[in-house]
Image: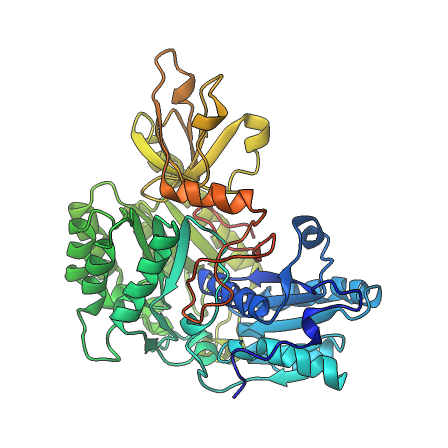
Length: 529
């Protein structure tokens, strides 16, 4: 097994004495984003520094790591598109190394080097800790190094971590999944579920809060099955209550649960813990009971709708989002009509909608009655049209409401042109908000601060709050220690956050000017296809 903390070697210094730079690119889900934070932390512990924002944008780094996804059909296309572009950069940059990790690396293994022989390192989901050693070995041996472990070597949360954000953070409560959904390759690539002990999780949440974070998201492939490994089926509800009680934490979220294991004690914990936000991501996948059975999703549409009813009864303002697959093998027009029925009844704030694609290694890939592309596309369009209408209606219902927005860094791409700032409301809706004219710089909200505004306009997947511009402004800024932490980090020239030296994954120091680059991470809105 690779050592987690390799000795400092000349990898830390180029010929002219400058420290070698790195860039981590992330393809995929929130779990991948958090894994990328671990990769960045290990590289910094080994002596590398993050590339500057300009160099990152130009992919001008000594080490480029691509953390891959294998869930979507175009995952391989994205990887090899990136690798093809980087081949030229590597030719013009002596000593540059390219590493590929994540789910697609776990799946394709040495095939990546066979297809892209300029790749230096391939490592899998079970041995993130091997990255620095493999880079050094590849440099020393002048050949590609491929190391794929078959089972988890080191729990990722014990690895050094370089946090992307100082005011909000991810905390893994488990890795892997025990479900057997026929369309999903994740259990094959991530392994069986492994749960962390509650004390370790709470300690990490507490450490994040001590560093300035006021929002934490608990991560797992199936968070509400948490505790099965150590024999406590009520563990997730207890964990929500305990984490939510940590002093200084203001917002607690989690993703993703599974409808089959979602229990009323979790709903009660959400409703009774003020810091748990009124937001729930509940994957539907299909509204047809026949298709759910073929998917091996161990719930039916009425159970799903019943969960939503109970959540809304306990938290009337909850925003619920979902995942839906269109065109699963054998899906008939009647099956699809059932999906439309359930979506209409569910009133989702947003949905991640996917066209089914065959993933080699999954049972569904070998099922008969694979649907023609044109049929899937036409159904997909009808579904997204319906969800766009529902999302707009749900957003319009927010107009006139007063919301508290946690200001974010970099979420509003047009903020410079519109003179707005952007953040998330408690229910995780994206809000673009105006600032009062002439607001002094010392009173302007920073990332991590909380702003109270009134929603004035709605779009399907975002809200606009220009109440600060009204004759009688509805606008208030609450400066937070998270905003203070962001300002302190920024003043120090660092645009990432974390601790590359602490093995606990959540220290106080940070170095280097940028965090991992995220490519294609879904946000709560209609995804791009």
